[in-house]
Image (cartoon, rainbow, N blue to C red; front, side):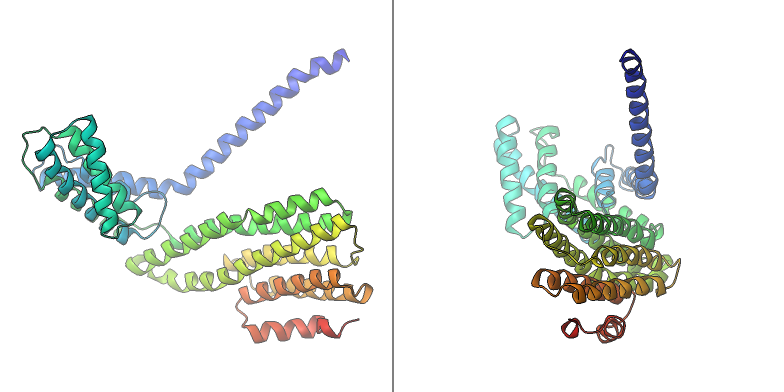
Length: 381
C-alpha cells in the first residue's frame, strides 16, 4: 500500500507530462496547418496599411488592415463575396453613423441607436452576416472615435476598399494549395468514419450495447466534419478558378467533389447501420457471425479510399474491400434470414455501393460489380 502511495504522484506527473506533450503537439499541428493563411493575412494587412498611407495620404487608415484581415480570415470561404460585403457593410455603417452623429452627437446611448439603425439598414438591403456585422463595427468606431464637429469624410470607406482589394490581390497572387486544403478537411471525415465502423464491428462481435451506443453517438457527431469538407471544397474551387497558378488543381477537386457526395451518403448509411446494430444488440437479437467482418471490411475500404483520393494509390483496394464487405454481409442472410438481419445487411450493401461510386464507378457499374460478387440480397436464403 505504501509503495502504491509513493507511485501515485509519479504516475500523475507522467500523465500530466503526457497531456502537456499532446497539447503542444496538437497546437503545433494546428499552427502548421494554418501557417499559410496566417502569413497571407499578415502580409495583406501590412500592405493595405502602407498603401492607404502612401497612396491616399491617410494618417491612420485603420480600416485598411482590418478589411484585409477580415477578407483573408483563417476560416476560408467565398472571399470575393466577402470583400464586397465588407465594403458595402462599411459604407452602410459609415453613412448611418455619420448622419446620426451630426444629428444627435456621440456618447453611450448614441452607440445603441447607431448600432441598431446600422444593422437594421444592412438587413433591409439583404446583407449577409459579414455585411451586417461590419456595418455595426463601422458605426461603433465612428461614434467612439469621431469628434462631434467632424464633417462626413470618405476616408474610412476608401481605406476599406483598399484593404479588400489588397486581400483579393494577395489571395490571387499567393493562394494556398486548394488540394491540400481539401485533403486536410477530408482527413477527419475518413478517420471518424473508420473509427465508427471499427467500433460498430467490435460491438457486434462482443454484443456490448454500451460500445454500440458510443459508436452511434460518434456517428451522429460527424455532421461538422462533413460540413467542413463541403466548405473546403467551395473554397478550393474558388481559389483554383481565380488563381492561374492553381487552375491545374480543378480536375482533382472535381473528382473530390464527386466523391464527397457519395462519402456523405456513406456517412448517413453508417449512421443507420450503427443505430441498427445498437438496437439489435440492446434487444439481444442473434446477429450472423459474418457481419462483424463485413463491417470491418467497410472500414478498410474507407482507409483505402482516402489513400486513393490523395493520389497515393489506385482504387482497387477500396473496391475490393467494399465488395468483400457486401459479400460477407450477404452471406449472413444464409445463416439468419430475419427482418433485423436483412436491415443490417442492406445498410452494409448500400454503404459498399457508395464507396464503390466514390472511386469513380457509376451507379450501374457499382451495382453490377456488387451483384456479381455478392449476388442479389433478395435471392439469398
